[in-house]
Length: 289
Image (tube, rainbow, N blue to C red; front, top):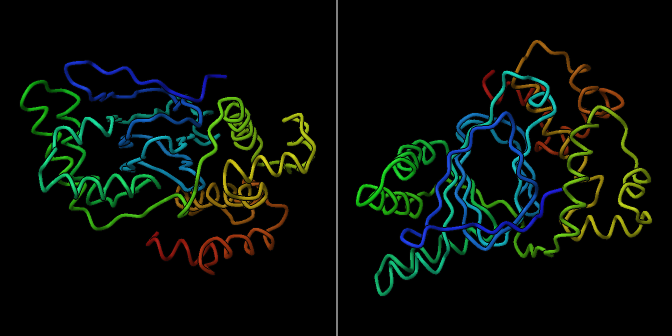
């Protein structure tokens, strides 16, 4: 298992790290680092974890993560089983002190400070902002010199002016950072993904972690801010929503079974619980499919 703390190496002449990721599937574990990170998904889908927040991601997903906020983009099991699928993203990482030095004693600094404060919870931007940011990230990745820095300044300007966004982690969420525990959490996330169709008991999870059931529950709640079964049900529902949107010809019974629900009735009940009272059919209609 890879270490959960990531040290990012910066060019001393340009303390920004911009990388193009092109893999069969994203392979970073749930991890954290002291830099800000802006991630644009070009091709891929799955479940993303930002602090105690869990939701689906797909092409065009744009998220800014603050320092030491645990995060993970995890592909679905169906993605891993399809050899033709790829995962592509552009990731920009930068230290906060560098940006503060660049904008020292300027009016723009306060606006950036407000953006950075919100990023402590993770920020998911709208499709409109994502479309505006995408060519700027491409420019930063490909260019050097003044063109690169012009794109950086324009990108920061667009982010500070964005008004259509969602904060992800809960207010007051405080990560408890330990590499040993993060390794265990990554094992748990992988196990859930690989066994989503099956019944998953608290006892088998506790056994995997070599903990008693009460100790496992305390650890999981401490790391994610949620009980294990609340997290598991949310994960299952996110998987079901992906399947509903991918192919409307699939039956509700098939989707319920593939997402690990023992019956359609139980699936419908949990779906409404996590989607403001909408049934699966109403959810599809609301999405215009």
